[in-house]
Length: 420
Image (cartoon, rainbow, N blue to C red):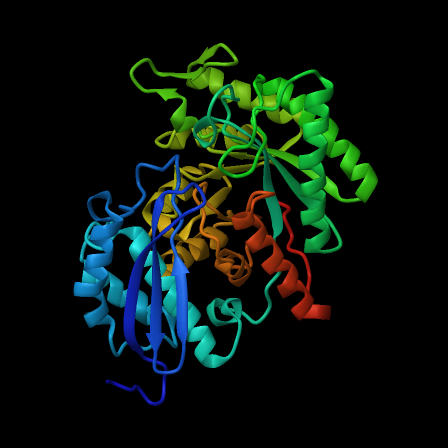
């Protein structure tokens, strides 16, 4: 066994098949060092961007586990976990591809995060302190999905994938999270008051309703107004349009089945502008398809003061972000580490985003793990917004962890600035 000046070095890496919040197969990894152990698993998305790395080799969790045991584990032995970059660089050496086709991005992410957790444990510090580049970390505001459709739900549902609530001003994180929960409950009451039957909950715990876009926004606007009056928490409304899922490339239109709309690119931009104006939207994610840099730029210029966020557009990929910055496409970026494979890759992209004045939104996925690590990633990045959902054990795990961290920080705890 190699020891590097008393540092914690990897002695073994174990992988197993578990299940994510949707019941799909996922990989979980244990990284065992000379001083500690870290364990993490990878989430998965239903609506994936074209430019994400490969989740698993040939889509197989079983094959990924065999590769970890037969190839990755032997080559990771002796690597120090004191700095996340060391393990992540080794993962790139092992895989050798641009899209983690050999290991799988989810495999790499699980190893990367488990190693970081082992590194934090060996130092006796919390994960966010191990990952953070600065000593001061602002608590993010929670962005919560309260009504969901698209690929995150079944049956009669909305065309738009997520209708979101974002606290913009609160005394602390716990108060902001509580306000989101109250909005979620209020929405259910308002839907039922209209005589509309709730169709259950989607993958992220959001209500599924058989309503058109603007009907939902009317309900959400009223709910946010009521809860803001009750709690004193300023609340804004957001959307994740997931436009690539409603884009018909052959016909060149966005097809809204429930809304009965077929919109070309110009019409789609106008539709988004009108929704931002009429409902005072503070956040719009993926309002146009994943190749529409120029259209993103046009929309961003037309709705100043609103976060126009790219997820499928950027996929946490630094080269995609560079193109977006050059074309002034959007002003915010979703950070999902498993889209690029390692914590280091995600942090490098986030650093460039912040330098370019893009707002970083650290995000969960629709098929989530039950761990709380994402809370630490958001805090380490000083991301002003963390997208976690509102309800569901796998979502609440992250929310509760941020509440605990807030308590530990005590007088040093402060909320981030979400202003553009």
